[in-house]
Image (cartoon, rainbow, N blue to C red):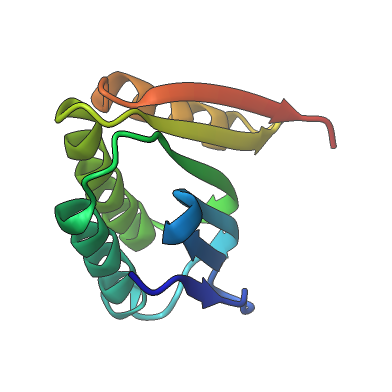
Length: 129
């Protein structure tokens, strides 16, 4: 499986998916003009990884998004749904959720993810600004 690296832009996050290391990272802000187009290939790549992967080794996803719009929220839910299915099938998936300690919106979204995707091992990380 080919790794994915997309540098951050003014409106999209850095995507660093190292499938060979079983580590997926999203960093920055996510409000691309066409969220479905930006996220579509990323989510498809994760789904392909999940379908082909036979290793029982844990997968770690690190998310440090300081802002994301409603369109990206829908796409993130699709991404986490696929990862939750992987975890439910027996492969540990660890979600590290990084947020500014004073950002209640991002914190609460992380708590919602924890409640909605119960097969994921969720770790909240409050970062001092």
